[in-house]
Length: 131
Image (cartoon, rainbow, N blue to C red; front, side, top):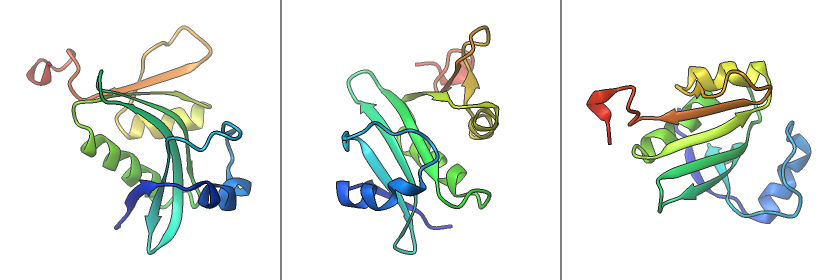
C-alpha cells in the first residue's frame, strides 16, 4: 500500500469536510495534512509537531474508507518519520482506543473519563531505547 503525506490546503480540506466524522476546529486550517493513495485523499490528520521538545500532538485523524488498513499505515508512517518523538492524543471512544492500541499507543491515564494515549518509542519502560 503506497501512501504519501503532504500538507492539506484549505480548499482540499473544505472539499472533504462533509465526510469528517469527528469535530475539527472551525476556520483553523493550520497543521492539517492529507494522506493520498493513487492521487486520492484517503485520510486527514490535524497534528502539531513540536520540534523543540520532540512532541507531536494529534488533535484529529479521519480515514475515509475504514477497515482497509489505511489508518494503520498512515500512523506507522508518522511513527517511523519521527522516531525520537513522543506522540500524544485523546481518543474519542473505546473503538478509537482499540485502533490506537493496535498502532502501539498506550493509555496513560486510566482513572479519568478521557482516553489519553501516548506513543513513546524511546520510553524509559524500554531501557534499551532510553533517551
